[in-house]
Length: 361
Image (tube, rainbow, N blue to C red; front, side, top):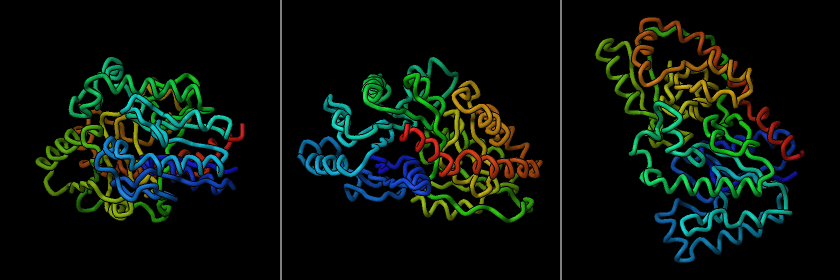
């Protein structure tokens, strides 16, 4: 079996899954349009750098020949076409031609798509369904604020529903917006950091708290940073804040080791690849988990998640941080749970077993 993951590397998920599939004997490769700012690995990039202006590149006929060449090439080489972030090689939605190439893969192999977040999340439906979210903030995406992008997403989801053999989502909340047959798929990550074998070391001088505001509004970074500043005013040098932003993934991984506690996000309702990476390194993770979305997950995974993640909301993060500063030994339980959880539910080979069964069905 030959599988191609394309055309994005969002969160490093496609590469992590591909490496897991290779462990199971599948020829699995990752093809991306271009490398993003986090520089997640891929087997091949079509373009050397992100475009300055996508529409301009299309209209100048810079992209079309290269993409058509790739399209004709991959349909001859692969049996499974696994798309990521709800997009395809020729997704010309800005010209009213979304997922233009999708029909071409039909009868040439299986079509699978994984949705990663805002490729499926609808702004106004989310606002209506929840009391708070990143969608409540009009700064999150100007395009979303018009409602136009929600319409584009619905059109693209409908087209994938017509052509795809299987549909996955790595965030439970976006399953509200996908066809009923869509299924939850746990994250994998681009690099699977070395397993932690050292015994737990108690926090001695100060608690080092790490946050990576890769998408500040989506993650609620301003809320997180404000809470950290309030805690620091009270507890002084008992805490140290580490903010990592705009770093390539390899560089970021080297700095995670210093943290005693990781804060992922407080708005979306689930954790991301950043949390998976740090849990693998034995770091307790704090994030907002929206419990009403967890019925989309395997029940045991949902139960384990609530036992593992330190669940906070914008209203409770300050109090929880104060509790941890005063009782740092609380982190030991979450550290041990994180290691068990990430190896049970996010092992690339385990996740690849799910996709392999789907490809073969």
